Image (cartoon, helix red, strand yellow):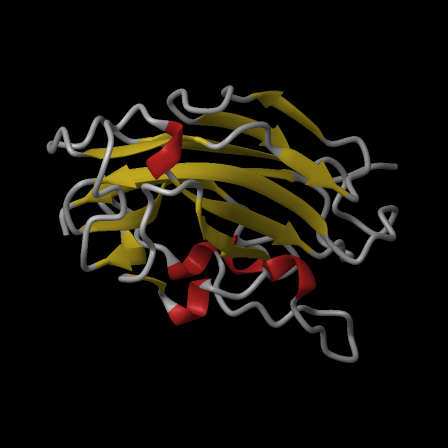
Length: 211
């Protein structure tokens, strides 16, 4: 039988209070190494982010090392800024064999300037969130050792600081220009294991603030 179908909803919490800040989808999400998983909702590049994904079977019938979600993001800011994340709603089992927040690794990778008017010289990713969860090491029992998980995130917005820029990352051009966007990938990973059969869900909310 197939077990453990997971739905994760990724959204921008609200329009930032500062007009000089912008967070949008960086394009299509991908779900690698899934068994029966599907991305049911996603936003085209440069539109407000709204992604819904079912991870599919993350039990022992899935022999992949990790089921890995990658969601590209575009960031623009004409002020010092921070990208923050929170798990604002969730439903996980409480039993010892249930999949929990700490079983879902999270990381932000591939930070890059997307054009000649983007500047990442003052930008850094919080160390625990800079590792790729989709390549996290495992112990002899096959249990991963993630640098950060959903349990690492605050439960309320604006959330835990993921990425911080002490200067403007989009110092020139308008906030609709493709030349001043900063690129970064949000990655989520689950290592299939002999979890107790069931389902779970979580809502991850991303917010850009000053600072």
